[in-house]
Length: 253
Image 1 (cartoon, rainbow, N blue to C red):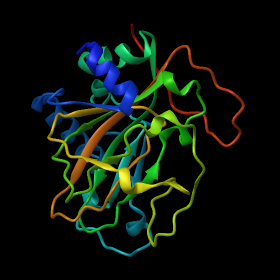
Image 2: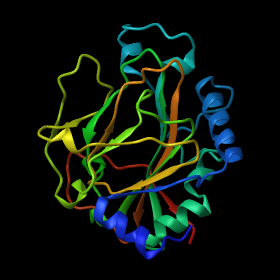
Image 3: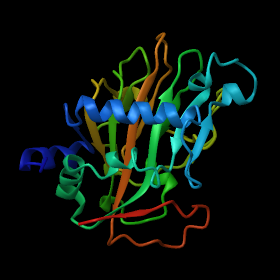
């Protein structure tokens, strides 16, 4: 999926690019089945993987019907051979390399699970808040819908062009239930939001300075997605004391 000049121009201008039907149904089925196996502990969880419960479950505000209703996300699946197929998919890598270069490494991998019955919102934020590597233009996210992502179930919302500014101040948000590590931008005009509804297999590439977030799941089903952040091997780590060292994996050229 090598990007053409118009697609590259759109990404540079808007800070994101939607690639419809990039990942096939068979691959999505494998990822979803693996996610469920990991949640139910039917397979061993790699030591560096984190399986995170939703804050409402942790605090006892809701009682989950099953483990699948309790989990907010899986973080760091670099050592899982099935989920890592996503981050190493040639269709994604060719598109990513069109934007940040040939030599890549993953710096963050996630399966996002937004169950019904919990708040589950993610405040408007910039992903660069979580990364120490620079420059920002050499980092990119790939975010693929496993299930339909709609306004009703809390699809992503983005502010086009917001990546052209710098890293904005982030802080805690004044919500009753906010998941661990979910910070929000302290002063942002949300009127320019675009809600990006996606069908299964649709993939959104976006810049780490793009302001984005997601809403509540008001449906009776799950909203699931799989994502990887990539950085060019040319990126460097300046002295940013509050950033942790991420789990990283070099992608074969």
